Length: 229
Image 1: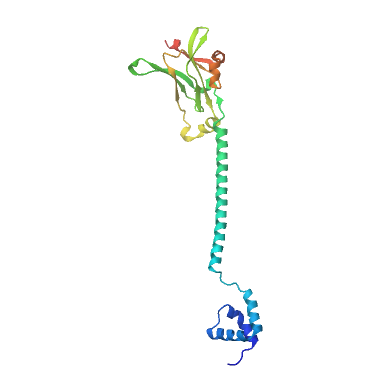
Image 2: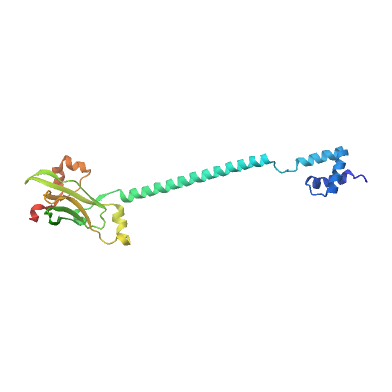
């Protein structure tokens, strides 16, 4: 066989190293490399620049690295989601606090509050109820009947007030399903137990029990059992 020049072999080497030559050409190059030191050195230099397929262990190592990166990204997304959810909850709690928690006492003239005695069947007993008709009312505050000393002697009394919140005052009246005036009934005590019902502010409830007479002086009498007789 005619000896192949080194220049030809070196031209073929990149194709040989990429394994894209025919079997005959491959055999020819390998035969030449066995006898030519300079071409072997050229082939070794070219191999350093060739990216060989990764070994099985290397692929596993790369897969572990990729998995770690994915897990890190996933944890970061979870943390961001949790922070976002916490921020939304915080904003929601803040809005709730601003709209629902601040309470303002509704003046008696605007409260739509009235008191009535309701008979309970054939038992002869009755119950005293507070009726709240103000659309802006969010609720009412009252206490258990308490016996106090008045100018007319001992009387069992109840004091109450209706209150509004920013929600009930400014938003609730504009809601289509809640725009109609609602009537709220609050039981105050037995009809034979309560002598008088007053409307006035007291906060906290314990304040009334500590000094009921002082609270009653500032309250308005809105119902008396004597007037019902």
